[in-house]
Amino acid sequence: MRKLILFFAFITCGFYFSQGNSFVYEVRYKPNPAKDSIKTLKAVLDIKDNKSFFRTENQKKDDSIFATTGSRKMLNFGFEEHFFVEKNSKTKEMNKIIISGFDYYSLKITENFSWKVMPENRKIGDFDCQRAELDYGGRKWIAWFTTDIPFQDGPYVFQGLPGLIVEIKDEKNNFLFSLNQVKKGSEFYDTKANKITINWKTMDQLRLNFYNDPYKDFKPNSAGNNFSKIKYTDEHGNEILPDFKEWTANEQKKIKENNNPIELNHIMDYK
Image (tube, rainbow, N blue to C red; front, side, top):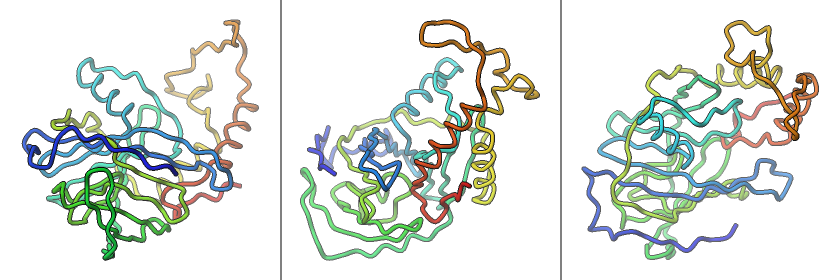
């Protein structure tokens, strides 16, 4: 995976903790470890006081729209890879946020992060970085952190090193998080206050339920759903009848082929 040239908006002495700070990462990952296909997205780590949020740029934009208008532009279904994480350094709480339809789930991350700081050093962009290693989620991770940025935080769930994590990847190159922009000040808000608290067992059941019937909420006979009156059209705008059986088979195939969760120890065995 290629390295990025880092462009930084300000130097270390310019940090203003009270205003918050944003760190933009490029996330590159393989949905299917047996294939070379790589997905790329941008995600933002917003830090202010004792709290931080890590979410995709699109999720942050949607939160901004909701905070202003009370409505959302994005609506995701399913339990595919989610990178949304909220942390509280004061209470030591960390939760993975899963968004599916109109539901927001909060999954507590309880693993102890036993970092092994290595003597190896490396220059990344303008920052002097040091190597650290960690076992998390059934994967071995290699991180590079810098004490030039005084935040013991990083992308996704990763935190607890003496400085900000500039880059982290798993040893098999399935996931790579690379810092490529730093911004002073940040839009810091949590618009998902009414979250449903779950554990990994519940998460597995939710994923299995969706796999078994991914279009349940779209079927006319689903009680209380919001999509029973949707009209389906082809590429020419002609109305068509939905073939839920075929669509379900296609969705199940896609889920099975892209079954490479970042927490590999919680991989689903779809039959």
